[in-house]
Amino acid sequence: MNTPTTNQSAQLPDSHDRGDISELPGAGNIIGAKNDFEAVREWMKAKGKRSGNTFKSYRTEATKILLWMMENKHTFNSLTVEIVHRYFNHLACPPAHWIRPAKAKKGQKLTDFQIMRGGASNKSIAYSRTVLIGLCRYLCAAGYIRLNPFELSHRPAVVSAAEQERYLSVEAWSYLWSYILSMASGTAIEQKHADRTRWLFALFYYTGLRIDEAVKGKMCDFVRRDDTWQLKVVGKGSKARFVTVSTALLSEVTRFRRLCDLPAYPLPAETVPLIPRLTHKGPVGLSVRAVQAIVTEVGARAAATCGDQHLVAQISSMTAHWLRHTNATHRLMAGASLETTQDELGHADPRTTRIYAKTSSTARREDAEKLSRLKTTP
Image (cartoon, rainbow, N blue to C red; front, side, top):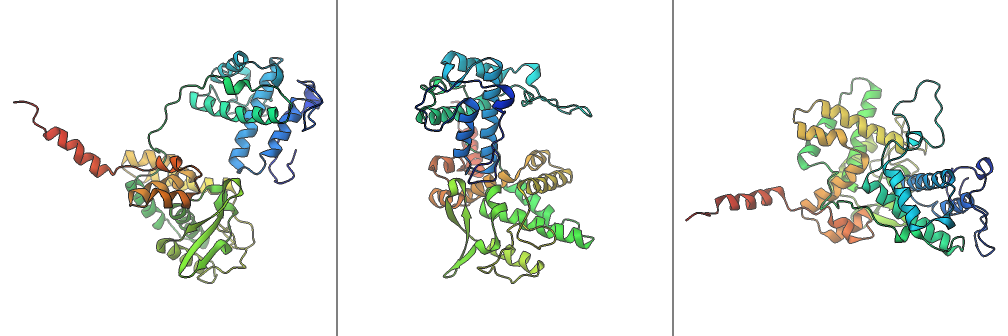
């Protein structure tokens, strides 16, 4: 089912094929849902404006709980805290018929239940719990269910990260950037690919954009106010913000645009995508999947040329979102304030920005050496 406000699809198990797993609890529900499937679809419609990855993860969590309830003859109205804990145990240790094979055999068709790669971690279960609390809050507010057992369930113990770990160190980024600058460019198409790769990585590193924000952006989103260039971004929750364009990024903008036979500086009426196809033509740029594939491929190739296994571990694990984390971490390490970093990244909660703040490794090393120099014997 497509939502009325987005092209994201709320594909869920079809109640007509499987039979209703919940009778209408009463005439008071204001969403008009006649069963749990319809109720969840209404919830998915309400979440349609979420980012693509968030919407997809919500749909996955909804599908899992619906399939489990159908298999165990439960409904949202019959759930208790004890039953919810059974569901969490199921996520931790799913039966064999729920496991998706790592590589399907030729001609093998997966069943609807084969949607898990293996047992879920405590962190994954905690995320499932959070999503399902939100789902049941919606269903309670709609009058479809009476209680929210997920809200009273036990939250799995999760080790909270003291700081962000999925980012490239300064040394790792320097190595990666040097590799990108030296990428082979024998043929014309290889040269275009190298130029676009350089632009793609510069854009993510200097702006900290989310991948969804980058693929939806246009060159006309660069705006000049007085003597300052900014990039208008529409982020989570359809909230607009302006990201300041540094001199380093502006240099990359003008370089890439000249290579695309465009005026050096963006114009207000342009429809050119922020990340265009190699032809540099048309208003449609690369997809999220294509951008992620480029980042992964470049990371793998750069890691293969590196002799430092600590750098290899970072670069080979890198995703596009790592570059967002890298931007935030390096900004704060360079002395930027938490307030401006929060604004630039579009964080609603300053605590999210705080996890990127790190004491410099040099200061930590110097203080650690102070202990070794301390005279502890008479």
